[in-house]
Image 1 (tube, rainbow, N blue to C red):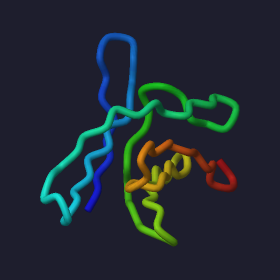
Image 2 (image 1 turned 90 degrees about the vertical axis):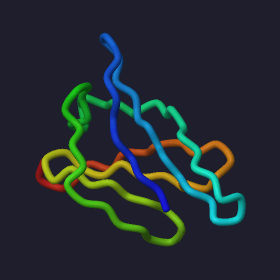
Image 3 (image 1 turned 180 degrees about the horizontal axis):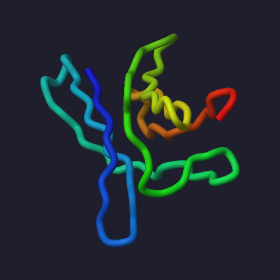
Image 4 (image 1 turned 60 degrees about the vertical axis):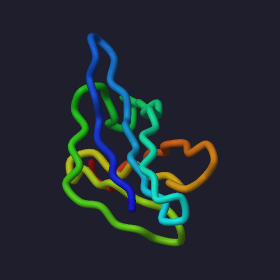
Length: 88
C-alpha cells in the first residue's frame, strides 16, 4: 500500500511517499524530490493528484492538467519520474 502527496515548507515543495510493508508491518514516509520541469508543465506548487493506479510494479499519480508522477514504491531508493500527458 502506498500514498503520495506534496508538502510545502517555505519556498520548497517536496513529495512525500508513504508506504506500508506487510512483511515488517511498518509504515515508512520518504521525502522525495519532485522532478520539476516547467517546459513539460510540471512547475512548483501546482501538483494535485486526481487519480492513481498501479502498473508493472510501479505506482502512478495522475494530475489531469499536468501529467503523471510515478515510481517503484518498494525500491530501496525510489525516484519520482514525470510523464506529461499529450495535449497539455
